[in-house]
Amino acid sequence: MCGIVGYIGSQGAYDILIQGLKRLEYRGYDSAGVALVDTDGCLNVHKAHGKVANLESVAAMGNTNGTIGISHTRWATHGEPTDTNAHPHVSQTGEIALVHNGTIENYAVLKKALTDHGYTFRSETDTEVLVQLIQYIKDTTKCSLFEAVREALLQVEGAYAIAVIEKGDPDTLIAARKASPLVIGVGENETFIASDATPIIGYTDRVIYLKDNEIAVIKRGEPLSIMSLDSNEPSKIDIQKLKLSLAQLEKGGYDTFMLKEIFEQPATLRDCLRGRITDDGARVVLSGVELNKDKFLECERITLVACGTSWHAALIGKRLIQDFCRVPVEVEYASEFRYGNPVLGPKDVVISISQSGETADTLAAIQIAKEKGAFVYGVCNVVGASIPRNTDAGTYIHVGPEIGVASTKAFTGQVTVLTLLALALGQLRGVIDAEKVREVATALKAIPATIEETLKCDAEVQTLSRIFTYAHNFLYLGRGYNYPTALEGALKLKEISYIHAEGYPAAEMKHGPIALIDHEMPSVIIAPSDSLYDKIISNVQQVKSRGGAVVAIVSKGNTAMNDIADYCIEIPSVPECLTPLVASIPLQLLAYYIAVNKGKDVDQPRNLAKSVTVE
Ligand code: M6R
Image 1: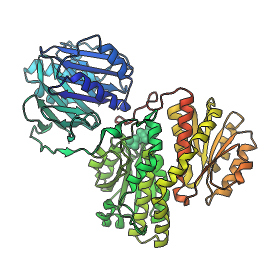
Image 2 (image 1 turned 135 degrees about the horizontal axis):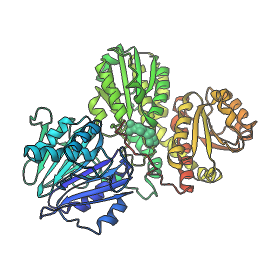
Image 3 (image 1 turned 180 degrees about the horizontal axis):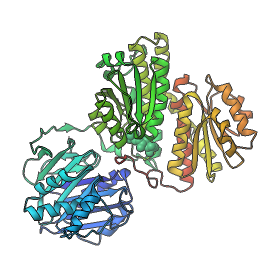
Image 4 (image 1 turned 90 degrees about the vertical axis):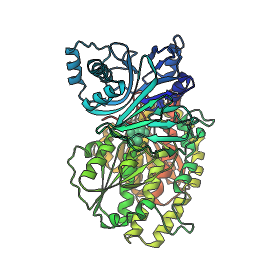
């Protein structure tokens, strides 16, 4: 939530900041701003509600000179998305500018104290309180900007990644973080800071992931200095090499990132599977499991924690682990788990699933699980993010940057890794026979090609989407492995087309939601030829006999549904446990085309942000 970019070096900062903000817009896009100190020491601030493009129009009318600057793209938490509430926020004296990602929980108390000291506030944000506090400390103690920032942060409760610059000092940029990510890019005579590495790519591949409670002082012409906020002791500077390329951040000829990400799933799943199944398909090898065999052998229960789409993947993971490993499995929303006083101990394994690796609720759930002695395993996409750095071990899904806010390739990557994990744990605990491993692993190896085949339904789904563009409600129904697929299909439609959609276990429908069905309520029914196929046929009949239109996702060659459903989309046949991977493809496309038909911004749907780093 919210993206920060900062720069100090020899190039004009403005263009670098704007370009960087555009790459971070997926984190929030309701307002944006930039602050620069020019060579005369003047602080120039430009802000605008709406997307970065609006900011560019506003800034074009002002002074954008300077080789140092900070910038921000916002996802509102405190105060509406207006020009005034946009970052950077500037202290009352006009001397200090600050951008912030996170939430200051004790802002009301601090604001009251500052108001008593005569400070007035322009915005409704928690961030303005922090910049005023820094100014207050600096003025009253006559300390340096660094000391004032450090002292202010010691008084703040909550989460933050911040960047600060000061009028009259074109040579100093200060950055700090606690529970919100911040990356430093180390170039030749230039330094970048950003909420993730994407604004830095193309300038340098040398990065430092700032740790919690660290503050960095970046001074022109001097070595970078990083200190612990608590002890003021210097931290070890650990420069890592980035493996991302610019091409991964571009649309590659597609109209949107979401469509590109849907179509690149065969390639991303090849990357995800690489080296994880032996050539003969007989064994699954995950280093995170190999290195922690004792934990997985001793464990008596596995709990999966996640949010949103990752939670849907977790529900599929539960079925997979139960089926192949025969260990009790629970699935929890991270936001509920963290406040649910969970009963956990050293015989528990908690698996956290997250695309971004920065979701605040999932991070908090991990913390609680660790405090209670559980072994915590992460399934994450973004390399080096907070979740992989805070878990005991884990497996990356390696599907590359996902920029569309609606998750697609990360979902299939997560389900793929959870399938591998379930097989690996089943092998390790000796509860799955070699033949079953070979059957599933061989089909999983072929999944990239199977998905390539599935994507051929694109034109058919696009045509179908036109029939349903103006529906106001949708039901998505599935059973067994595909109940979570139904939830995910419904979430995709809601997120990008703003059509109300509910995912439901198909057999549960008759206990309530069936009352909703009439000729205006289409149902999408996931009905591959699996062990529950005959059961789901009766559920389809129940919908049809109440006048509802049915779109059925069926296995290729199964024509039985043709006479019952209004529209059938065929998917290739795969083992039952892999059907969510294949069935989710037409659902992604259906949501996509309905949203496009409605003229919606699919990559940046309203009110959402890619990475939810607040509670
Ligand atoms: O980065 P994470 O996987 O932890 O994010 C979790 C959810 O915020 C995310 O899946 C969200 O639901 C997506 N917008 C779904 O498309």
